[in-house]
Image (cartoon, rainbow, N blue to C red; front, side, top):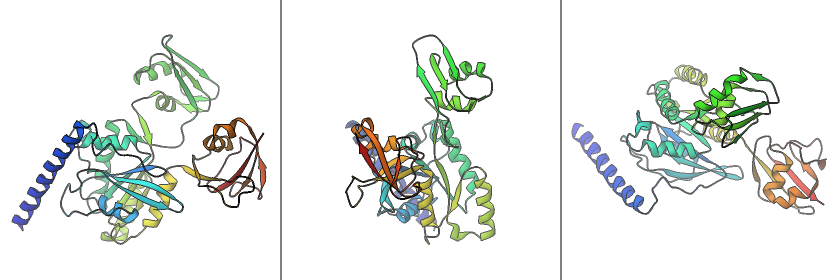
Length: 347
């Protein structure tokens, strides 16, 4: 048993040395395994400590034919798979394992955290049998150390225009919870000393800090409690409740497939996007869906098709969840919902 463990450790070190050499050579060409082309309508990164089941989860929710290692740190570079969700695909990236002090430069930590920063959403994968709350603390600490925080609700509309001089000027059109006189200090704390800040919707001091910060970014987070098949239901429910008080949480088993279909729906939901199907007047079937942000308006759909449709918009007709009745005539400021079908008429 001891010899087997020593051989596994030696193999892991050899694989790491080989991958490091590949990365070193790639740097010479200006590319590394972390410089990947985005695929799908969005890109989601799986983060977790070693042996939390990242490869198993990637294989369970995507088309990736990834090998599952039985020793620590078996994934040495990002692996991409495409997750089918109804009529769209979402790119899922399995990142090499995070560890404590990753944000300080340990191993591949900075590269993995860079993947997280450039993603559209983050799955925090936790092993249900190995102190999942402790794992979550490590992951959140590393992310927060580089300015990545969980998105908690939509950011109010706040416009920040940098200026060359003049300090911080604040214009508040709506109610503000806090002391407006503190906002220059808040902005300075984020490295912004000259700007015009316009608060156009009800906001707080923290909202303004989020708006002016260049270092801090907010991403959708979803805690995924893996290996639910190996823990008693009572203990699983308690863990889900405890972690769920901090982040939205779902329990799954990548091995048995339990809750995998639900996880796919949650991934689509936490990305806060909608599908809108444009159709030309007289066309039988709609085109491929436009991918828009939640609460997008007809103007957003028109502009995404082509600026010509936005500039020359006359009216639109709509079918689907947001229509009061089929072929409802709507204007450019109408708010759309997922799976709406629209026909746009121009002047």
